[in-house]
Length: 223
Image (cartoon, rainbow, N blue to C red; front, side, top):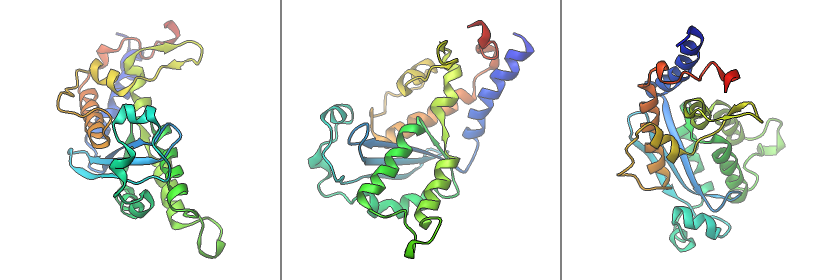
């Protein structure tokens, strides 16, 4: 293994080690009414695996049957749940000042924003129309800018190169977990907290890897 390979692979693994040992870590996951829908379940888990938040929400729209087929949540299951907007202050406070990591943040963060639009209209407006937006908007923007994507970080370890885009292909959480031997036998697929725990286990598994296992990292020009 060349020095170039070792250095590049070590940097990838170091990021997972950094996450695994950061007491500020919080892992976020959501289930939604659809790919372009609202958040109906949100989970937060910290670096020790403690559940910080695990709730469902009543959306303003119906659940897409294709989404229901994935997560198993039906409209009737949410009839007595609070709206996401009602619970946002608690979610916001739990995320503020934490190191937020998400498996595919490009999906979850826009869904949270869209759900606030639907359940708390005008949430982004400052009182009196003052410039800069509301405190909620500022908090959301800070959380979004700081959030890190585990899916992006994992892609070099998956090792599937895309010539067209000149980058590594993303791996589904299930595939990444299988590659790293993560035990998911006690997990419920596509449940927010359960997926958070799975991501935490994946982070820990990746933190224990050796650069020698990934000779292709740092030599992408040969792939």
